[in-house]
Each structure stands twice: as C-alpha cells, then as structure tokens.
Image (cartoon, rainbow, N blue to C red):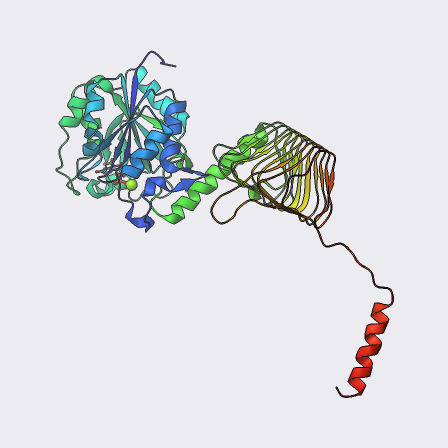
Length: 453
Ligand code: UD1
Ligand code: MG
C-alpha cells in the first residue's frame, strides 16, 4: 500500500459523553478490556499511520494520559470550546501545519473501527480523491449525516440530519464519521468551513463541498454497520462489547483454539492464545493474559494478568490474578487462587488453596487447603518452596518463609520458620490418645444427670 505517503490521524476525543451518565470520560470506558480510545489508536497504528494527534476536552488530563500510554509518540491537543467536528480538528492545527499526505479523522467513541477501513480511505486518496468518507447502509439512518452521491457514486456532499430535506432524509447511505483528506489542502479547506447550519457548529462534513468547488473529487468507502457503531450510552457500549467479543473468539478459533461454547468465553483485546489451547465454557480472561500451546482452561475460571505455560491445566473454578506465572505442565485445580507467584514446571496446586507472592519449584506438590500468609496488614512477604517439596494439606505458610527442595511439611502445620532441604517439618499439636476415655466420660455424665446435678 501507499507506504511512501505520510499520514496523520486526528482522533477526536473531546466529546462530553453525557448519555453515559458516568464520572469516567466516555472514551475511557472499556471494550474487551481496553479503552475505546485505545481501540481506535490500535486501528490507526495497524494501518501504518505514523503521526497521531488526539484532541481532548478541557481538563481531561486522564484522556490525554491514556492516549500517550497507548501511543507514546502521539501529540495531544485541547479543544477549549466544543464548536463542532471541524473546529475540533483545527485544535490540532500545529500537527496539521507540520504537513502530511493523508489526513485522517477518527472519532474515539467508535471502537470497532478496523485498520482495513483506515487503509481503504488512504487508498482512495492515493488514487487521487481529495476527500474520502467511510459510509455504511444504516438500518435506521436517523441522526446520521447522509452521503449524497451522483450516478457515478462520487460523493457530492454530506448532509446532516437537521439540515437535510425530506428527500435527503430518505437516503440510507450514512456517514460513519471516519474521513480522509488530502493533507496538503486540508488546512485551507478546514479554514473555510463556517457554522451557518441548523446546529450552528463547524461541521467537518462540509469539507466535501469545499473540496469539490476546488475541482477535487470525493469518494465513499463502504463499511459494515457493526464496524462503525458509535457508543453514546451503556446500551451501545454493551453492543460494542458483544461485537468485539465475537471478533476475538472467531480470531482465536481460526488460529487453532478450541472453544466448546465460545459465546460463554470472554477474552481481552490483548489476550495471547497458543495453538491447540482448549477453553471450556464460562471462562473470563481479563487483560494481560498469555496462554501457551496445548494448555487447557477448564470451566468457570477467571484469569487476569497471568501467563500459562505449555500444556498447563487450570480449573475448573480457578482464579489467576496479576503476576501469576505458570510454567509448562503446571496444574492449578479447583478453588485455587494464585497471585504474583511463579509456579514452576510440573508443580501441582490442585485444590482449595491461596498462593500469593510465592515461588513454587518444579514438581512441587501443594496439598489441599494450603494458604500462603503473605500479608500482615502493612507489607507483603514472599514464600519460597523448593523443587519436589511436598506441602501437606491444610498448612499455613507464614511468610517470609522458605521450604527447601525435597522437604515435607506435615498436614495441618503452621510454618513460621524456614525448613531445610529434604527435611520434614511438623508444626501442629501432637496427637494424644487416652484409652477408654469416651466410655468413662459418658458414664460419668449419665450419672450426673440422673442425680439432677
Ligand atoms: C457526526 C457527523 C455525521 C456522522 C456521525 C456519525 C459531523 C458534522 N457529523 O455527527 O455526519 O453521521 O458523526 O456518528 O461531523 N467532537 C469533538 N468536538 C466537537 C464536536 C465533536 O471532539 O466540538 C467529537 C465527539 O466527541 C465525537 C465526534 O467528534 O466523538 C462526533 O461528534 P458528534 O457531536 O457525535 O457528531 P454527530 O452529530 O454524531
Ligand atoms: Mg455522535
């Protein structure tokens, strides 16, 4: 593609998002585990756009910070007053002055947009168009700008709902909002946009007629309606989530992941899944998870910020929290929680256990009900368990503590001191047995009751 053409994407994120009814700015609401703004920036990056400007509303340092986190080379600009989409683009004037061949404008509240759409618009510019708009056939066009075309499919103008005639309103081909324009001419065209319309706003969409008056052509690139879904409220946020999840599941299955009931599995945009991974029903995978080849995630497990090694098995009903790192063939069974801990090759943590801030050596066996006591209310401490160690059921390991390689901990122990390699540590009450005690006790109590005492 036109890699020799220099591109600048201006991402508009200055909207108020009132209908979200939220303290969080709209574009920071998440879809598939990352902000809507991050999705748009990812599509821009995947389309090979090297320069990015993000326009934020006044006082929205949080939005600017997210932009820089996701696109460290991006420039951020503040649109002091919300006077329309053309006005918002001009807030990034400084970036526009630096010059580009392709100027792209995207809305940060359209998280499902793909790099394919961005590339399509750039191709239209490379083929000579002055302006290109992303269009879609709306099931219900109400509220959108309508794309007015001539018989040859060339774009004549974009008419906003409020300014459209009856006949124009019957057009179903709508403006998705994503536009591309000749970077060399754009600044001049933008400067000529006025606000003489029903809303009294500076409409970016007016650029089509302005470019045409200068003899430049405008074109339409078609997209699917799901791809251009704009999120204005929580209902649309959930719709966007559903589309994003369905895309992620399909991509995972296409790459060799088995899902028995894909519609019950929730992934994140950054989930990394190896070949021949199996994910059973009702699994939730949050951000920062990577699962290697042949691993099996059994039903009802929840993973976040965790890495799972090749051939490892997780769950059913397991929880891997951030920093859980499981090596090859590690086994984590039911009702086990692992946080900030390394579980080495072949180690087993099979039942009812909490492992936090720990290192578990290769092939160690952690018995049912083991708890690492890692927190004293102020600080966290580590537990180290050596290779081939065996921790008996229902033991509490009070950190900081080390269990040597090949050591045994007797069931029900509360371990507060280090245990040497190959040793046995037992830290529980010693068992005593009193012969006949039960019978004698019953007889004595029965006698007492008879006497009314
Ligand atoms: C816009 C398009 C319309 C299109 C529709 C698609 C214009 C004039 N109209 O209309 O053709 O069908 O999107 O959803 O462009 N924004 C700012 N600063 C502003 C104004 C807007 O940053 O001063 C941002 C908003 O946060 C939003 C985007 O630009 O992300 C679009 O603004 P919005 O007011 O939603 O435009 P629409 O009326 O939906
Ligand atoms: Mg809108």
